[in-house]
Image 1: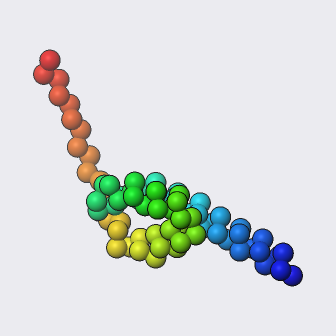
Image 2 (image 1 turned 45 degrees about the vertical axis):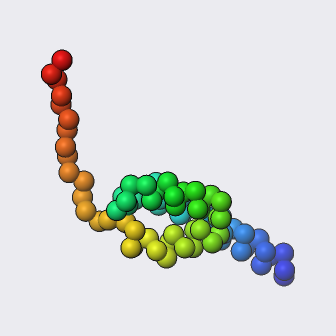
Length: 76
């Protein structure tokens, strides 16, 4: 019984870890440096960092759409 519980908790922690890492890489943060900070937090503290990120995600991520701003500088 204890072994099954341990395997279940470890698999849930790994699932949260992968979910947090994939969400960090796809999200647009209000501060551009926060994605690097959160990746490091989740990598160094996998369980606590993943849970903290997933709880605080809505305050950190912007929902604004990107604007297409091409930089065609052809003045050579």
